[in-house]
Length: 165
Image 1 (cartoon, rainbow, N blue to C red):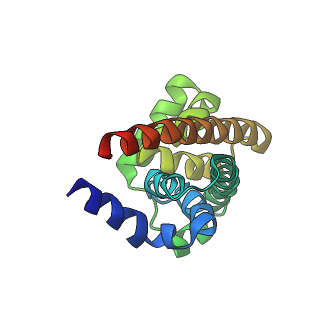
Image 2: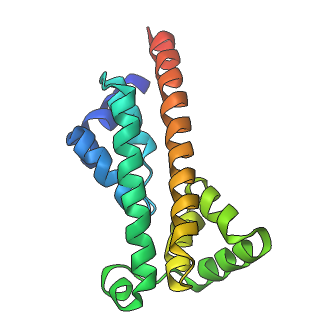
């Protein structure tokens, strides 16, 4: 049964069907829409895709998505056309967290924070946060997350294959 579920996830998820290109778009969209990349990454690693390729594509897609999210916030009119404005409670919670712990720290950690993390880059753009500081924090944060996900994904996949056989 577990094998059937894994097989369905590996072969039937939209982003997975397109391999590394799907991962690129999954990473990009997940920067401003809460779409997890972990399933796509796991499927690609299970199918034998080179982990370095997975890391590079995920990182590039996520960083581009981070800039798109920043721009969506920066240009509020465009945000309203493409995505619903973040719920006020999430926006206010994000601003409170950023004020308390510092914008740089939160932008760096935002890839790890579900839902609120997706809003952080948009809010940074809305508040016209310094683009250089944003770039350093966002790029570093997304790169560290990609390293961790791919590294642990490889080890988890090996463990899972060992357990299922």
